Image (cartoon, rainbow, N blue to C red; front, side, top):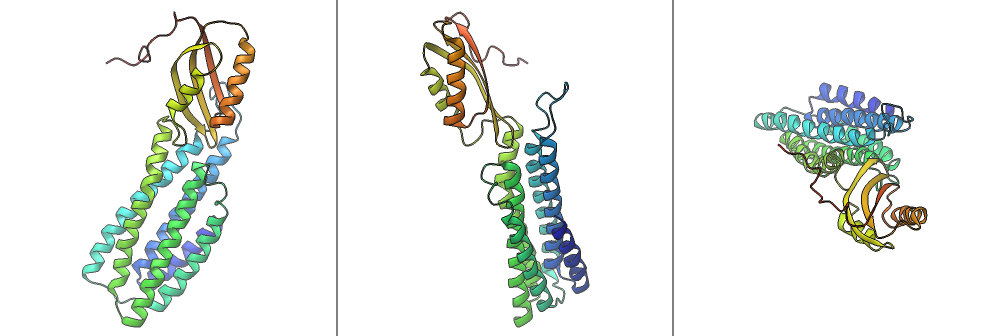
Length: 281
């Protein structure tokens, strides 16, 4: 994070000095990237805090809020950059292309190097994935700035500076949409994308003496933590503890659900409708 902050300051200073929107926009995005990394680290730290009487799950959900904030930051940045780029495209200022090239090339190295730190964990941790995608977006922006600098330097095409800003804003907006959607869904307690509710319900119905399954809820508690609650109707109470133990182990092995709470009900008297507890307006 500190490397990104130092590079952002250097790039912003040179961007203002050279009047390059490509460098200034890349610097602002790198600053946003550093803020995103800071959010990711803060969320990871909060997630380690022990549960309390008030926060019985601890602060695990901070790892779900961080990527949402990260995605919103990216969307806001892309909108502001698009607006400024369109304005500059009408009257392109003179920009030193060679300076744009070498500063942006340094940005590629900084961002790819930092992204490598998050590569391993980004497949299973949405918090890390948010930071990882943010860094890759920065590297892409820097690459576009290098190409623009080359065109300005060799061909004198000053309009490439503003055109790069437009391209970058569109790429960032499109790239952040998936993260925004996934993080919003998880904050709203949606079933994780890696799971299908019907598959889990079908499995629960195959357990010994199970006659019905209802009120199944599946959501993310935080990074790499999935919770489930379900009402299971059985024809007998025999082997209750063994049943709970089997179901818990199988849910973990089959679906990576590591926080399952099962309510066992006897007979059909408790097999009420899924919508019994739905809010009424």
